[in-house]
Length: 453
Image (cartoon, rainbow, N blue to C red):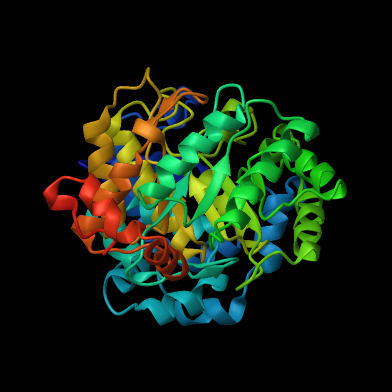
């Protein structure tokens, strides 16, 4: 089915839903690189107007990637909850935006989530301003549990990311100490291993679990190895809390990551069988990022933001504890500058939350992108207002193993302070017991004091 819209006397025709979605996307370098972006602002506005008038029901009739060709499409179609969708089935994309900004509340959005497809939420995000993306996401509340409770109102959690270029246990331990002293770690203490082999992974897992047990820290640990390596570690009896995997929005990009839905189900079942959670059983951790499908040549002519939203359908199949968009990590080939990174981060967060996911964002950029820490400060603050579940905590905001810029432990404290947020309740109580809630403000400038009080 084609779509058309006239702007300024020029008639713009879009051959199918995939083309319409791509042309309606706000500018980003990845879509330009793929030859999918609108050729002018007028064409983009025409696509956005045509998209706004499109009935939401149309997304159930036309797939951007054929059902027969892609297991992610099959997952989306087969899991769609028609009863949940019925409440908004009469709306257009534009009407859906109005409803989200108006009468929709947290309870209604939670009930609606199973009835939304990723393409629906991607479409509405394309006609939203930044303030719309913030306002809609702020209404969504997604709570998950393993050893503590994440996503509660009034909280902001931090992943403590103690990466070391050579996986030196002393280097990892020093960064863990630094983060705990500054109130980080309630989302997860998660290490990206420099070397992904099972011996190394088991050694790091044992070290992390030893720290957690020694100090009775109510949090979860994770070594962000490939899912197959983690399965081998589980087979060896390693103390695996969360199973991690990078995922994408097409069968092809997941194949490039070395995974399939069947493999993820196997890993999920293996982690559940360990029964290591104390307050819940959410045991998966997924990372995503706009541009991965294009870099894998598995985008099927779809724009990168739509495919990012489709990755969230994969994530929600496994009831994860944590999901985050590593928004600026892939590089300027996909998100060129701070403006594009900011837009993408807010889109990803809102789309994930509407689909029922506990969304965090790695507020980050690579050193060759046209971005700096001022851009990250702005995005961090916007995400905090939008109710982001968690952000990263990296010593000095500079990850020396992955070689990119993220947010520091102090950045997390800043966000908690200015927004009046606290850590997860079990972790906040532990900080109190350890005397860190009282000690930490003494390390901070006066405006930040009280972030953990």
